[in-house]
Amino acid sequence: MSNYSWWSQQMLKIVRQCNSLNQPESPRALCIPFFIKDSQVGLITPEILPHIILENDTFEVIRSKQDDAVKMVKLSDSLDTALKRTQMLAEILARWRDHDAHPSLRGWRNELHSVKTYFHEDPLFEIERVATSLFGVKQYGCHLNGFCRTERGLLMWIGRRAKTKPTFPSKLDNIAAGGLPAGMSVKDCIVKECAEEASIPEQLAKQAKPVGCISYLYHNELGVFPETQFMFDLELPVTFKPFNTDGETSDFYLLTIDEVKEKVASGEFKPNCALVILSFLIRHGYMSPDTDPFLPLFLQEMHSTFKFEEA
Image (cartoon, rainbow, N blue to C red; front, side):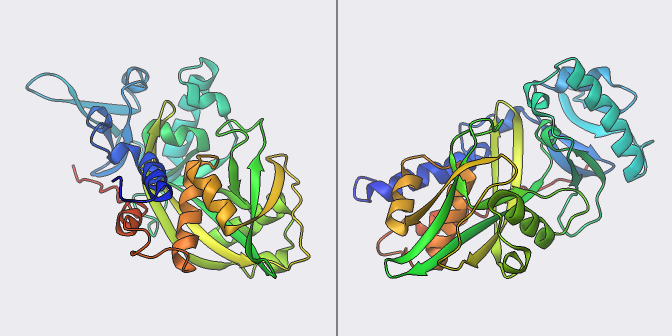
């Protein structure tokens, strides 16, 4: 690896950090598959399992006949509609939050996310956003690369997350990004985030071009995050200056591509935002297999799959 540039080596570390649960040393083997009927929808970490076992009217804990180890967790078949599942889980999660059952619930947002086996399918239930990691269910979001063309070349608008953010405070971020709330389209979501986070006018935000998505399987002390982020590019007028309205961004910077690359590799960005920028660099011709031999690995790790099983 010593023959490769410092930037490429650092970038590979960041990409693999985002895919931490797919790395050989990860605790993935300790996680318990979470099923609804015959389809897996997530992965449960051992830390929350004792609380799930106590909710035996809602969860069916299936153990191995050989050693009595927990083999899988299923939501009760009596909860046979999305509404029933949503209501029951809301009651349980509120109780867990009130008893501080897990650190992830301290950041309660009152924002529901849809849970699906695959994005194109109907929701199986809705769940408080911060609780998605407890069950390792797929999460979706959207990110915007905002840029302008000047005499200095292409410049990119970068935001700094407020120091009060519950996750990755003060890290650099894309100009606008957010999780996909239940019942909202991806395009409406990015338009909403553009308005709240950067004061990008609606008609301008609607010009954002969808440019694909990235997927990765991340884990930390808050749980498991199988995430897909839908990406948009938006060329902004040279005269545009972003202004935050929701208190989630403290500052904005207009940076050259070289400056962005240096800050990405130095670990100044929230990791998944670094992947969004990496995709931008690849798509806009700032990288090539000759100068960045890890490029095929980057693309592979940025499109990780979380294959669900059948019971």
